[in-house]
Length: 116
Image (cartoon, rainbow, N blue to C red; front, side, top):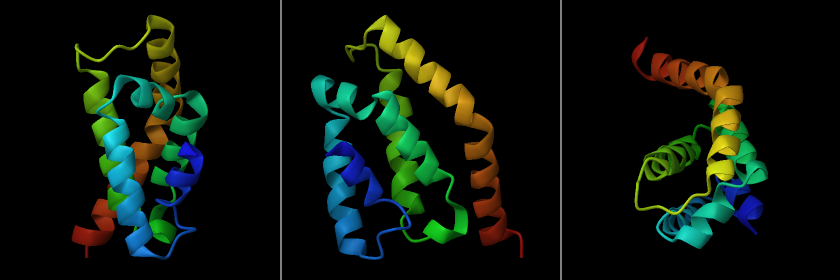
């Protein structure tokens, strides 16, 4: 179910209403400890980072995907959030793997908006 919601934030989805609905649900997942742990499973985070690296092919939905990723990173630092140590290590490893691609994609998006 989470992967399906995440795919709604990808370039596969041209319907902005579906994007907004999925985004609302996924942001609510960040607020609940159990749902947050589901949302931050390796396969879910890997899919989200892939979506965040789609570039111009996902220009419509990219702000929502990046906002979700930003929210997850912020919540990850929340000391009140119950995250097992081994789960934290999985998340760190995944972020390390995709960090360069995500930064590059963000720079390209910013360049496209402000570089001309």
